[in-house]
Image 1 (spheres, rainbow, N blue to C red):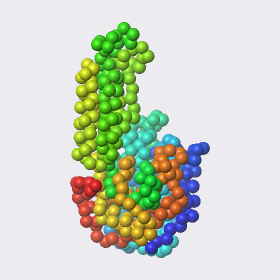
Image 2: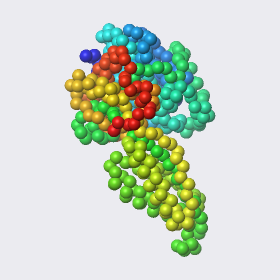
Image 3: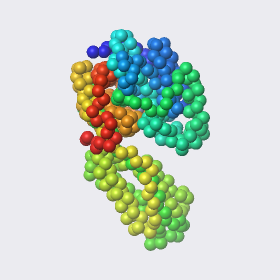
Image 4: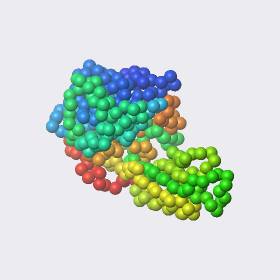
Length: 428
Ligand SMILES: [Zn+2]
């Protein structure tokens, strides 16, 4: 069993929370900002001080490398992200990254040589709030290329992606460049659950079965603008009326009828937006999630039909575009067994669970078996400055990662289903 140093892990968590720390105890360390660069520099300094090699790739994913016995074998990757939401918590991403670094230091302390190299990875821009989409680093790594469209993206603060990426890479001149994407044995990530299930169950470790599918729809309904005072009911072609009628039906059926379904309207706008005019056009976004790909399709069809019917009833035209489609993913069964076994070695209770949010592991899972270890966060709260993880859960998450790392890094054979993972059906 590999012992970790809980005090050192806590000190690291505190040091990184201070970078971009907010007055309310959270962090604002958005991707590719100066704060993000400072956090990366700190990790690189700590790594170099311990004698680990540091690399980065063209999307600024950062790698801290500890050699194994056989360097010709694909390494085990462990890690998470260091970027945050604008008013984010101190554990989202940082917990997984620093737990992984603690495992590397613990291996060093114990003088343990693993068969495979163990590499801590910090994925670039997981959050996607400053530059969209999220998970840019892991997505580009799994595809072996940076989509050309990303280079011209502008941040919400006006910064250009290509420039911020280049500044970030330049800020670590000591980190040698490696090509985008290299063979990986497996990937392990500790993350806070960002939901209430573990806390409610009173179980400290979640072994993630997979990540549910997500689909975003952009809905536009066009009617006819007219005077609010003179236009009687039979003359109105009111797109807001059509949309809200459809909403009320969707709210009353989609989630109440299926406990696994998620249905959210997050943004709505009306044009011209005048107090005394019927809107000409309304727009809204819809976020639908479900672990079963077939059910996700059914819900999307139902949403489209409901909005279409209401638009017809009210004399409006409708356009619905799919803005984002993230298929559900099932994580490697053998790697899940490795994590469950690691939890039992640590004598902590674990339970299988789904992830409601997507993570870098979803993209890595397309090229190598990925596994996630969830720990509870207070009140299920995340993307919030009040995000909090109990001390004992921080330690348990890192201990389970340490044992799982030992098992996976000393596994000489590839995990059995790793080559076909991106084509297998989710296993939940
Ligand atoms: Zn995260």
